[in-house]
Amino acid sequence: MPFAALGLAPELVRAVADEGYAQPTPIQTEAIPLALAGRDLIGSAQTGTGKTAAFVLPILQRLTGGVRGVRALVLVPTRELAEQVATSIRAYGRHTHLTGAAVYGGVGMEPQTRALRHGADIVVATPGRLLDHMERGHVDFSRLEVLVLDEADRMLDMGFAPDVRRILKELPDERQTMLFSATISPEVDALARRALNGHASVEIGRRAQAAEGIEHVIVAVDKLQKRGALGTILKAKPAGQTLIFTRTKYGADKLVTFLRREGIAANALHGDKAQSHRTRTLDQFREGTAEILVATDIAARGIDVDGIRMVVNFDVPTDPEVYVHRVGRTARAGAQGLALTLISPDEWLLMADVEKLIGQRFPREVIPGFEPSVPPLQPKPLDDRAAPKPERSMRPRRGGKRR
Ligand code: AMP
Image (tube, rainbow, N blue to C red; front, side, top):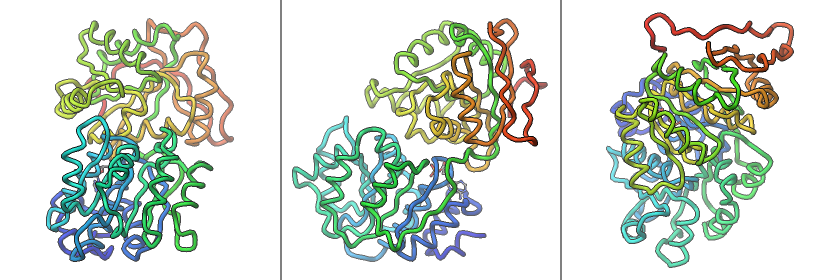
């Protein structure tokens, strides 16, 4: 189905064509007509599904030609995501006169204050900094028509619930509200009940689904051997842009130090780094000058890089839904990607939860020279049809590179 069939105005159809989008993604097909009709929405959608366009395009259409002033607000958990959504607003709105402003902490207030006072139609903000501006009277929401809560689960995980509640109290009741979240936990449900107009809301998207096109592989290895095994994998099979997740910032830094010693160009991205450092690191990753990025979950939240070939879980996440978030960074918009998890004997139960959530048994591999002291656990099949694949040794494929 072409974009034009969704009821979008010609200047928006032109903008998505400029972006090179041939057709809407499933969430866009579902959400755009409903959003254009003014419905409240709960979208169960992870990053990489095209959810940003699913709410930005209807907002642009609604605001075209009306009065000026802040008429739409998008709340996001991180500054990177704020920048990314603001960039999308510029791209999709390039044939309109509408403007967006990104508002987040860690940088000066003054340029944001100017943007808020003088004409931003759409404000994209992290909750804490927005509240600062609201308390100082820098922003007038009396004309607000649309509110989006993007990555609501992450916003709550990061402790923004009280800030979000305070912001909600200051917004006009008469408005359209859209909430997007990769997972719909009871907490997200409660927020949705508070923010959305229950009668008009519709739920779209599937819950906790890993994108198709991802190949999941588990590498069994002892805990203390993980770094060495990963270095060997990265050298044997350079995958291109690779995003590695560690549970802690400390773990991220230690891994980067190790990889550099091995001659692998790697950088760390986490909340302790200055904004300028984060921007430089992301640019190097995008351009491919340092193809390995090691990040914590929170830092990785706003990363929008197409063409990530491989996601590595250096630790198995304790929440299986976090696995879905992480691997969603590869195989975006229909591409192929590899999700590789290094798993030590103490992590097998966590992995079983992940496989249950995704509904697949992943192949177990071992790296020669890094065999674990305890053989990989072969869990019971999910059902009779899905028997586990036998363990196999990981040898570079012909041609060396994974595609
Ligand atoms: P999002 O889930 O909004 O973070 O989008 C993920 C990526 O998909 C972004 O790089 C978008 O530019 C891209 N994208 C969004 N919609 C489409 C589409 N209809 N066709 C191809 N790529 C898209």
